[in-house]
Amino acid sequence: QLVDNTTMNAFLCAVISCWALTSTAFAFSPTIIARTWTKAASKVSLSMKEENNDDLSSFSLDRRQMLGQTLSASVALGGMSFLPMQAIAEGGGIGTNPEHPIVVIGAGGKCGKLCTEILNAKGLYTKGVTRSGRETLDSPSKFVSYGPGDVTSYDSIKAAVQGASGVIFAASASGKKKGGEPKQVDYVGVYNTAKACLECSVPKLVVISAGTVTRPDSAGFKATNFFVKYVYGDKIMDYKIAGEEAMRELYAASSDKSLGYAVVRPGGLSDGPPKGSAELNLSQGDVLSSEISRTDVAEVTVAALLKGAATDFTTFELNQNEGLNKAQGNLPDLPSELIHTGTSSYGGLLDGLFTDQEMQSKYPSIVNSFKGAGIEPIGNLA
Image (cartoon, rainbow, N blue to C red; front, side, top):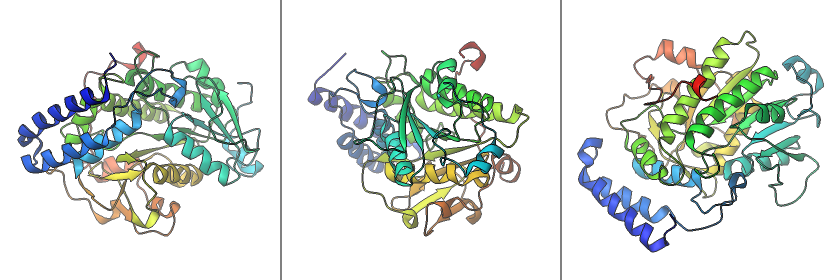
């Protein structure tokens, strides 16, 4: 049901105040919780606007803005042939051949559009995929084409990624009315995309997920689930980690180990100017969190794709140094080798990452095995 801005903002402030009173459950003082959640209320705009992301013409919040702001406050493709990796190497690399572009899924959203713009600026051939196949950049480019693709349909997304030299998954839940709930997009959608990339021999899939998805007791996890459910659907954080795990299981079962993935987990997303690589903090273990500009997220996402095998089978969190803190107070300190910061380039942040398997083996006390609560088996949904 649509409500006016004043009513909804008043509702949020009331909820936030109640949250502050029960803050002891989150290992924060009431003063800190009240201050940070009041900041969240001022930042989360519940304006009634026509949603342009992913071609949904319904009134709703920007899904990543809601998710990102609640996280930050809590911390204070058809017809192309299959294309093996060897063929891409012989053809000049990822995105260098217009017949084998980099596919950006969710190109109508903010992060997806930024990824498309960055790839275009690099002179790399890119296909922006939205449900309708509409154009998303402000002006035409010889490097950018468009095509339809629905992540909730395996056949649709397989057609969209066929022939791709790399894929960026920048989609996320976009509302109940259009079949864009977290279950369908962040869980089934990631599974369908990973399955299609493996079937079509796409060398690399990079998925934009979210920080704190393995920390269900953190304020960020709880708050994001709470605020998002009224607009986009239930348990978005649970379904994001479930989608990650479903993807990992597919790649683990694949006999072709030349095909890889990477997972980018940004902190609270903002529309502010980029900080640049020197002011960012890239870590592993899902321990640290702060705000992060969408532009910085897009730059690192593109860098992770273009880095090739160096980022295969890795998962990492991305935040700005300013305001950086643990997602919850009782988490362990990270060893220095799991923290990357102060580099002169976005790609430099990605040097020396541990694979998911290496993280499990070397740091079992840091990696949390949480895979989502009350998640249906993927076989019942996909």
